[in-house]
Length: 323
Image (cartoon, rainbow, N blue to C red; front, side):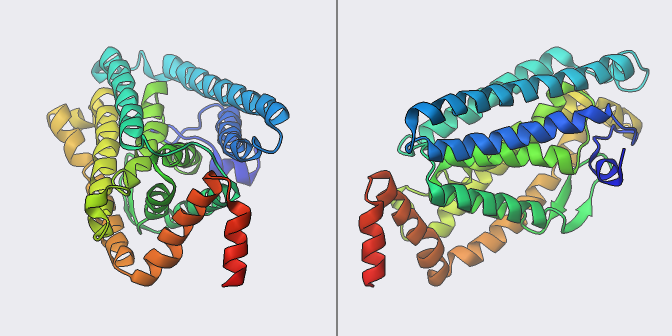
């Protein structure tokens, strides 16, 4: 395998590589999700043709996810399930149940808190989403410290994702967070079980899409910093819960090594999430306190999005050019 693949290969807790081909399904899943977002934008130009391509993209997403889960599952059965280290502390049934309930909670909150949001992507939201994912990915490399069994505190790497959710709504934010979570599984993987993979990556980071959950509440119209703080707290609480469940049900062996209760250890270990989000919210509060930032980045983009959703893109462009 070439140097690029050596850098990107998925690793186990012991530093061993999972099957080399696992990189490609995860990468394909990331591309398929991004293509799905882009096709949602193109759909209005050729509904019939693009509609078929959207179904193809969805099928590719499902196929990529199935292959990833199957390969991780095979590794788990061959190397983890009957070992003397992880297996005595593995809790399969609680992990499956908690993952399903957490997905239901995140999706439910997305539709309740984002009931006025639409899921129609235009060129602006696609471009903005791509930029936010790229910025978060770049900032995730600026690590203030990294934990030994996965997880790190970064320089506000999740802030671009939260800003996207704040501007374009939590429904779009959920998809952007999901795409970023898959990207994280390529960048910095720590995988031993299929459901643990879901909890620590796609589910945990899709929760960041709720960062803009309170953006459109009238009560916070004059204090956007508060709505960002509340959204950030909600998003980070769900992300923490996802990591906590993974730690408690999949990585209990580490708690045993430390001589601690599994749940106490998982809470303590995954508390890095709150340090990470505290940095995000501190930087975000400064940005959201700037009238120039709010007017030029947040309100202006939101106004353009609303005009586009109402089919007034041309009129909006004319008004801008007249100015």
